[in-house]
Image 1: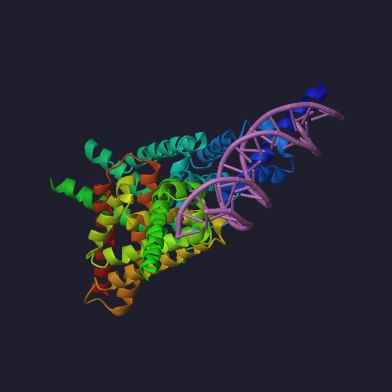
Image 2: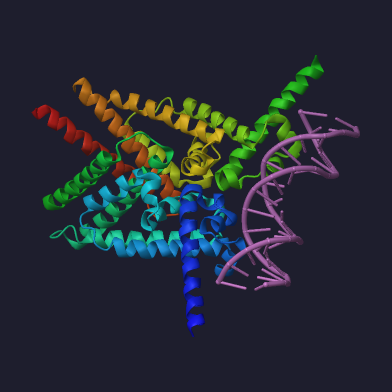
Length: 211
Length: 211
DNA sequence: GTCTATAAAAAGATAGAC
DNA sequence: GTCTATCTTTTTATAGAC
């Protein structure tokens, strides 16, 4: 009994260590650049053990993305206004590898590569990323819907989708800027981005009021 | 003499064929995903010939980026307003592989991967992409400067940089959306993006007028 | 300049002892 | 569950005949 428990705990511990290792590697090297040998070394295990815990590289990344998403859901349940969310996601891009040890932030850094690498079309990890991306988009739309009280339903619906699309494009765009090493003040541009979106909303609501 | 001329022409023709081949492959497969064997096959030449014309894979991509940039400079000398440029670059992202056979459009598709792949840090092709990215940014700033006549110099300078940064983030962001296969109307969002930036400018110029 | 054959290295994956 | 040794495939790159 005691042996069995210890064995199980050891297994979970190793699995977790491998996930942490692949997270750190993937943030720096991307999917193709992360080798199973690297992961094993960083986790302090032989490569054979990695394959004992995970079917293959593809599946390892699928579970990594799921893990990151779980963490994201728990830490991001709270955020309030659109401005706060943009502030968070854009200035976070700038924090480079420092904050990226955190799974929620790392998800995006790893994910963008999956979005762009068309050649990974049949890759299960890429498909998982796209599924999570869609799910997060729905969350963003739902949140936005609650932000325009008093406006008619169809206006609210359209506006919510528009804000979610624009917000996603801006955050993705600034993540690219961070990756490219652009020398800009991300904190300042997070505010500008929010200003821009807010004035779009104001214009649209004013149009509705005039109708 | 005749022989020498024919030889030279044949060489240039092959080199061009290889560049066209790597362009097509790279748009679909990215840097790592494009193999020298693929390129050779697509160009209708054996792999040995590819290495006769280009030192190695890295250098091949450096010359590809240069080639794309040359084409871009020639075709993009004209574009007028910010709205026109956003319209062009954002809706172009949506055109996927169709338009991407064109070097100027392909540059971005290929380049984004270089921006994101941190692990290619010492790669000369990545460095060339970043240099061109910076050069294009300067062009964008210079163009923007001409758009706010009557405003004081410091306001114009700041505004021009801001518009260039935001415009670049938006176009990069929508390129990511296109690569991820997001189901959105790119033409419509190009206009929305322009609206958002224009209202930012209007607000800022109004502030200045009040001072 | 073209083409074939092949070297050399890297990386994913498995076998099997412990 | 861990670890070593090894197989297999892929890919960059070169040698050398033509």
